[in-house]
Image (cartoon, rainbow, N blue to C red):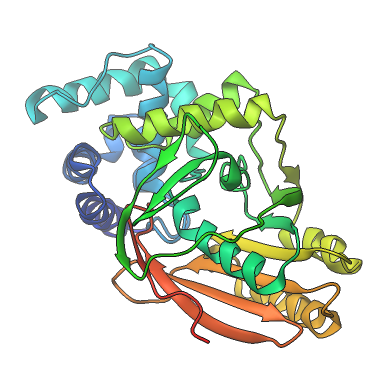
Length: 345
């Protein structure tokens, strides 16, 4: 891959970080774009000669290196970088490259894994709609679940506009709420929950917890604290995501109708990264399961995915056996705001 494309990927990521409230990560990306040279060692050479597409929607090379540096800070192998001015930041990065070359090169082999807890505040009202319309307990199946923090969304406390819901929790989610206010159903019970990921992380593993936290941008202390608390809740409840291909896993989850419950397949900022062939297989698989759904064994699909618009991600919900599908809102990719429409009757 030409160096110019890699440098441009760092600048694109910097612009995204500015928009998502991480001025430090934006500054780091711009500095790397400007200062990296292939003659500076194995790490710089690896970054600038990256063989695949390096951008944020592909291999996410800028977030791989930012995550590797943050992991070194969190494990106290290097000093914090966030407060350093540019003239001190670049020497600190070069020193980290020299002293921790093997660790960083290993981290660069894996894509970033984020599990933004605040997305639960956008997803939960979608579950409210299903629970209210169907009147049955829920079974949850999450595709691309990472460590599964959004799979336990009923274990958090919420302030959604004027609606408060949930148990007492160390995780309190209160996004900027726009549009109509969702109403909580009179009955909301999760009978079963499961998730899959090609490379799931275990919330009870110190190494996996470090990996998860390292991909949170270093100057976003509130996200770090929120994720640490959510990881603790997941570990207490022995939550474990299955290691599996999404389509194979979905086929097994959808094979047997869940009589007496509403089965909800959901995903957030995951489906959009699947190869087109897998997307097509997955769409067909869910449509076939929807065609088999009955009033006793209904199926729903809840999505929070990018749709090409500049303003956040689309929230869409489809419910079978009728198959009706609606866009129920939009949300910031990090869940900072939710623009809610709800289910239009």
